Structures are given as C-alpha cells and as structure tokens.
Image 1 (tube, rainbow, N blue to C red):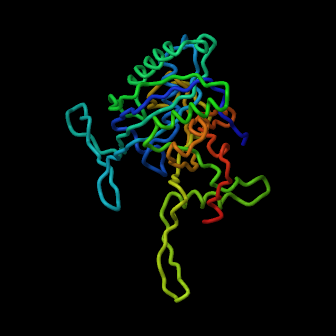
Image 2 (cartoon, helix red, strand yellow; image 1 turned 180 degrees about the horizontal axis):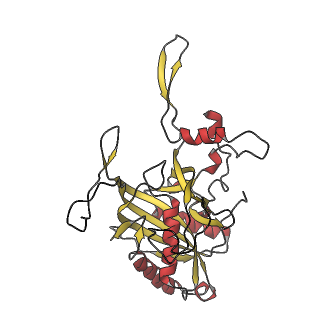
Image 3 (spheres, rainbow, N blue to C red; image 1 turned 180 degrees about the vertical axis):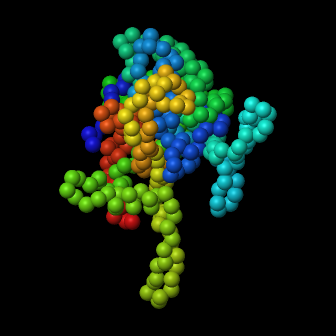
Length: 329
C-alpha cells in the first residue's frame, strides 16, 4: 500500500466543547463505542459543502478529542443498549425494535485548513469572524447522526495561521494542547500490528490474531516457582488505551448507476456495497503530543480498488519504536 502523509495545511481551526446527543455508537460490525474517524471526515466534507465553494479554503484533516461520554446502555458486566420503539408506524402502532446504539459526547474538534490566497493574508479579526461562521454552520449539521447542542465552555472558536518557524509552530501547538485538556485524543496505531504479508510469504494470521486480542480480554493461568497459579489478563498496565477501530471501507461491488439499486435512500447518487476496514487506535492525553500532525485524521480514496481509508500520522512522528502486539500475542 502506498504510504500516505498529511497534505500541506497553513491554518488550524479549534472548535471547543461540542455537546452531541444520541450519536451512533455502532460504527462497525465488530466494535461499538465512540464513533470512528470516518464519521468526522464525513462531517468535514459535509461542512465544506455547506460553507460553499466560494469560500477560499479547503478542509484537509480533523482532530478528535473527547472530554466526556455517556453510552446509552445498562447492565453491569454485560452491557445492553437502551432501545426504544419509535417513531410510530403509519397506522399509529408501535414499531419493531431495531438495535440502535447511542452515545452522548462532549468533543473538541481541530480542523487542519489549507487557506487560499485571499484568506492567507487575512487579519486575525477576519479569521475570528470566519471561525464563528464555521462554528454556526457546524451547529446546523449532525455528528455521527447525533444532534449538536450548545456547549458549556467559555472558550471561543479559534482560527490561526500556522507560523513559518518550527519553534513558533511548537509554541502555538503547546498553547492549543492546554485548551484541549482534560480530554483524550483519538490516534491511529497501525504500527502496533505486524507488517502485512508480502507476496510469497505466509498468511496474515498473526496480524489478525493481534487485532482480535484487542477486541476481547483474554485470561490465562500463570504458575510461580512454588506452583501457585494465578490468573492474569492480556492487557497489562503500561500498554496504553488501545482499541479496535474502523478506519474506512472497501468496495465489494462495482459502482452502480443512480436508481438501479432498490430501496436506496438517495436515488440521485451512484451506489455500491462495501465492507468495513479495521485497524487499531489509541486514546491519548493531548499533553503527550508534540506536533499537530499527530492529531489530525485525513482521508484517502483509491477509485480503482474502491478503498476509502482514514489516516493519522502519529506513528510516523514518534521518536520511539512501537512494541508490536503480534509478538506478544
């Protein structure tokens, strides 16, 4: 697969403390919980279309920072979604129960922007007005299917040019990190999985086992020198908050012309069937990040293979080598 890097940006937009009600908590068939990065790259695309092509900017990447969440579940060890039977059917009868996972969120978003020639020379007052306009437009959209409510924070949206100097960029990012705390940033950890098999090598079984180990909690017996057996689990302290993460989709069928597939929601757009692509992610406190590139997610699309995938450059900018999970599994 061709390595990807974050495209060039020249500004950062910080939208502080969005409250999202009833966001979708099932972003793939093998995991549930926080919405995946595709929900936010999709939000970024919808926001750019809503702002209109006349606005001289492009949205390149989005950083996801969670301050608080409340999953709509009940139960102790086994969690069950709080399900409802609404809206009513056309005849007034109650609808059948369809499993629907929901979660309340409090988020901050950081957008990486590529400003055009007009906005590149704009004053800070003009950028502040633009940030307020983008925030107001964002409130007209949905985040992962959830409704956006007014936030409780006194922080205002901030749009800043990226300085040319590396030292000034680091100072700017250190200031941004303070506004993102307390919270946890969602980052890609593709590097924790063993390298994919090359043509002629063995299968990707070890890669799949390493990923499955992060989807469950394995308990195994360990005997000491006296023969006393104790039970340990597979997630030891110090390994970080690693989670299975849907990062995109791959095409299963060719692209069908609009209206040729029955029961589609939109009959004016080409459609195809896809399956989710999975990798690993990590929740990390923003004070452990050193560069804005570690924070931003950006999408790529390969039309020939039908793959849409989200990327994050955290592992490319780390100073230390990762511990491959497949070697420990």
